[in-house]
Each structure stands twice: as structure tokens, then as C-alpha cells.
Image (cartoon, helix red, strand yellow):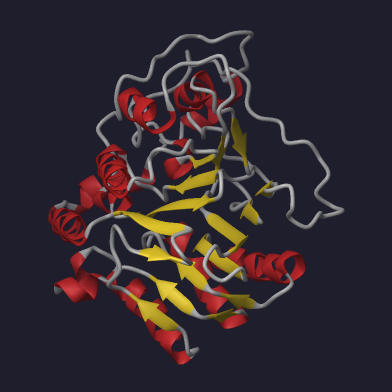
Amino acid sequence: MHEVDHLWVGEKSNTGDAIAMRFTRPDTGTNAVVVIDGGFRETGDRLADHIENYYGTSTVDLAVCTHPDDDHIMGLFTLLERAHVKKLLIHRPKDFGYRSSDGVKSDTVEDLIALAKAQGTEVDHSSFAGVSFFGGALVIAGPTKDYYASLLAVQKALTSSTVAKFAHGTPPFFASMASKVRSLFGDPGETMTGDNGGTTPRNNSSIVMDFQLGDNRALFTGDAGAPALTRAADKLDDLGRSVANIDLFDVPHHGSRHNLTPQLLDRLIGTVTDDRRGWAVASVGKEAHDHPRAEVANAFKRRGYPVCCTRGVNLWWRSEDAPLRWDYNGAVTPLDWLDETDAGAA
């Protein structure tokens, strides 16, 4: 049995990630509850409520902070206060000699670790690519320890103006352009040519998790970009875990055009096909109409992965033997082909 919930994050255009999952462990036959990121502070309350209401417990076996951006880490503070979290997985810049003033958000990480320890939660800050949990159902695909250390160094070296350019992403004018993005009747053709300069080192430091249970597989990417995801794919190849088809693909960084390349998508999910291979999920705010990027959504759809968005709704992926929910009876409508002519420059 497995069920994965992508909770909506962001009342307006703010966007973040909050994922909860419950599954039957292959090693013990008991259920495990895992959280991957917690969104913003207020998201943490809904996350805790969701776990209590639908999983029937207030215990979280493992909480993962993929990276310390506010839209991923802040809700975990609330979750730790509300739920009994047995273990927190988070990478720690302090272990590599960084301080709060070094631009790697060491202070936020340390605050979360301090809260976790005060709550009696075990903190795991030494597990990197290749480490598995729950009888191999969940495996860290990336980053390696050395790659993480190199990303911290690059993040520190960046000037504040460069960091701001990446961090703010979409320019204000795009809001007025969003209404021009419209559905098409057919595939407009591949326009994604690369990752448009890539994403930040901190995004590339995201913990990438591979979930495999029976014939089902999901890949959780955080905000990782093409270099990080390529390394993660290499690790999964080494572990023999890339043979299985990905059924659920967590689209990195809310569908940004700075995280993927056509070649990487071909490797991870396959080349162009008329068949549906699986589903892709993009976490976007209620009014974040500029994400996912049209060329990114189309690239997934072209390869057999229609994209579903959390825009104000929770998305639930489950096995047939998962408990039914009376209030989860609406059909999920994936994005159709999107017009890319007004895609903007961000």
C-alpha cells in the first residue's frame, strides 16, 4: 500500500513544496509516514492536520528538508511542534565550517535542528546519496557529500546581486502576461533547448529521493537542477534502481525553465511517445499562473507525463489498496498543450 499527497502551498503567487506519504514497509510490513518539505510556516499546520485526518496518526517516521529555502523548510518548524517526528533528515552547512553570515542559510538549519532536538527528534545530517530507508523503499539519489560541499562553496562565493537574480526569478511584468498563455489543440513542438543558465547552488543541493515499492515508483526532486539531477540519475544507475519506470515525477522547482533539459528528460522518463507513461506533479501557488513554464509542461506531456498542478488543491496518488477518502472524489485535470509564444524571458 502506498499513498502520496502533494499539498497545495501558496495563497497567492507564493509557491513551495509540502509532500506527505504513507506506505507499507517491505521489510516489516508496518506503515511508515514520511514528509518531504513543509512549505511555509502556515503550511505546517495543514500538513500536521492532513497526517492526522488521513493517515490516522500524529507520528512522522521521517521528515526530510530537501534544502533550506523558506518555501521548503519553514513549515517543518510547525510540523515539529505539532507532530511526533522520529527523525529529521537535513544537510548541515555547519558541518562544513559555514556560519550564518556565509549566505548558505546555516542559521535557519541550526534553528530547525535545535527545535528538533528539543522535541526529542533524532537528527540525521550525515546521510547522502546511496543511503536507504525503510527496507530500501526510499533512497537518497543525491547529492553526494562531496557535491554538496562544492555547492556550499559556490553559493558562498556568489555576489548578493547574483543570488538575488536567481532567487527572485520571475520579473513583475510576467503577471500581466500570464493571461496570454492558453491551451492549444496539439503539440506545438519542442522548444526547450537547455536549462537557460541553470538554477542556484542551493537549489542544486536539494535532497533527491527515489521511492520504489513493488511495481510503483516516484521521484522527488526538490528544486534540483539539471547538474544535480544528472548526478542523481548516475547514482540510481549505479544502484540498479533506474530500471523501473517512474510513475510519479515531482517536477523540480515548480516547473521552472532553469532545472531541466530535453536530454535529461529523455534519460529520466523516456523520449517522445503517444502513450501515457505516468504523471507529473508541479507544486504552484493559487495564483502562480507563470508556473509551470509552458515549455516544461509540454516537454513532460510530450514524453507521456501529463502535468497536474496543486494550484489550490491537494493531489493524491495512491495504490488500489490504499484507504478510500470520501472527500477525494474529484477528477484531476492535467494541463493541456500550452501556448509557448508568450513564455517570457525569466
